[in-house]
Length: 212
Image 1: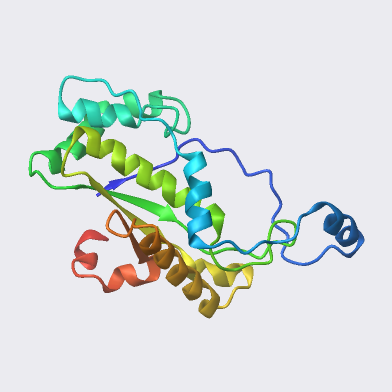
Image 2 (image 1 turned 180 degrees about the vertical axis):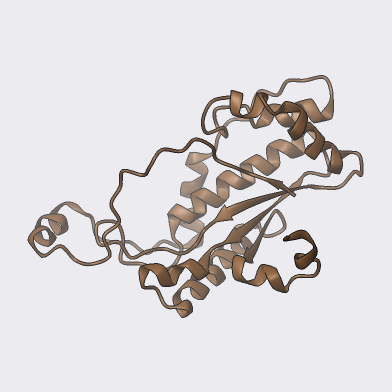
């Protein structure tokens, strides 16, 4: 697998409160719109307004062209040097799949759960925010397919087991993961996006050999 990493991130300035703020509640309710229930069709139509243009791809080989996708500002987070300084390494990882004519496997650590932060949401299940995040991952996969017909697969290593640290019971984080998979299936993305809960990794064949 090729692990998608985010380097040199600054501390998140956002405070995540998990309990009501009585003095602010009334003011917040006055400015935050009420929640709406959208059908899958409506989400699909609205998500279409966020679709991005195809990336300008460069390079003379399949490997170079595939790597150029991740240099584009639509995908890249941070300075290009974070990739170009390790060009040989990334090309080697890409070549492992390309030489075998297999879909390129990427891994992404994320999608732990939805914390019911009062100033943001009262939900614990995925919603339109997750739809847009998954759509962005699918966009990456389809850009890879433009230069490499076998395409790619992104394995999302979900972190639901961390929910207990913010007071969410395991039943809630499991419901979140099930709904995330359901959304991927309803949008037709389940062949390109796979989900594995991090706590279940050790149950998979070969885990002990790889994890040393």
